[in-house]
Image (cartoon, rainbow, N blue to C red):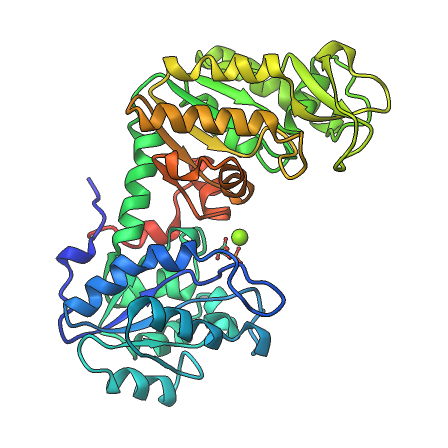
Length: 399
Ligand code: 3PG
Ligand code: MG
């Protein structure tokens, strides 16, 4: 069987190591980092490389500059937080290919670190252009990828470099793949998945893959409205994709055939609009008033999911079950997140969550630290949930 090449088995002492990170961190208008998770998770690998005497060159993208230099997307602002976190200087190169960066890499002492400029300033990165990958590879003797969140991109720094250099997965990528495998590859059963979020259209592939793999699938969020409508319920003024009714019915039928139990909401929290102070009401799903919006699953629905968590040994969660950004429509998401965290802390549950909004929802519930693993990946987590092979992971398999 193919096995992932690991950093601990890679010869790095004295060598120039190109380390692909995802420093595409969220920032405010003043370029202040609003969530440093991606930096913190890269530190164990960075420290290991330093301790083992590697000459480390950090590669990353930031934003989507589309192949040209865009000053606001320069990685320069990251050198201070990186050197603070590592307690050592981080040399900065003003590009990622060419004589300048090559000289910066060549000048690194063992244990030293440099940061190259945004990979996506060159169109060759996203195109996985051969000449661009060759040029990048000239600054390294070995390659380490420590960013699951870019592994769905077949870009030069993700697949081109490991094709050219001795390669391995770093500690964070190894841990993330292990956590994901425990959630869906080789899970302890019963396995419950909670899938929420706004649109069925973005999650068809996820649902189709999950029904063949999980024992229980709870659907919440606005995407549940499409399922309710497909069953003939009126959903008032709620977000809904009626054109996907047939797809929703097919998912329900396929789930039944696969022995996967689908849990849909039985009640809902409705209001006139999604805004703080909107008057909420709890109604059964067959009694949603015209003109009202479903903004959270109701208490009976949250219980119907929450009461099953103690029977399960694994929970996989993607997408909030309500409009958690606005109180009180966060109630069910918070309740379920805290239930899962409590069960996990008690050692009774393996809980793995991921995907953009999910991390924010769990943090809002104060439940993030209680989960077994929370992925910081967005698109890559979804593609993994869809059962797709991620090119960046594939590229790190031992030959
Ligand atoms: C992310 O933030 O999800 C990753 O950095 C990938 O970014 P991308 O969607 O622009 O490729
Ligand atoms: Mg993305």
